[in-house]
Length: 128
Image 1: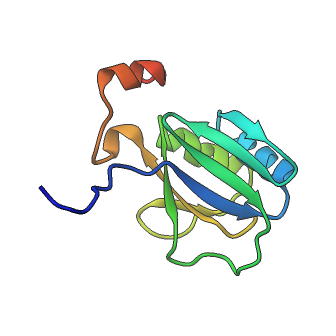
Image 2 (image 1 turned 90 degrees about the vertical axis):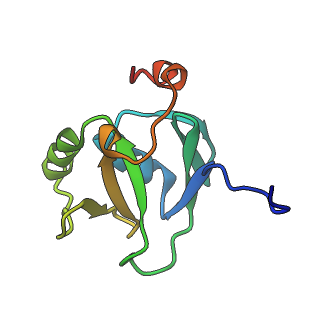
């Protein structure tokens, strides 16, 4: 057994945006989600046993290679929602896009990811 602690997961990802209301409207137009908590400078979107923290204050240029992956129940439905919203899908073999603040998002379908959750967790998330 190692003396070092073992990484076991990711709790959340923080995305910097210029305006919380605009960010909730943008992401809410694409995805069905629950806002766990909200203030003038932050909103927390629940994603099963993790969350996304939308934080007011984006200052850097748009992401190029840096990205994070969102897992959805239907990737093609997501593609259609992005197209309907006029969001540019980035070239390449993945379903990547930049949000209006330059955060690069990669969309992955749940049944195509490397690790899965237990049946109990899937039931709680409505994915069983």
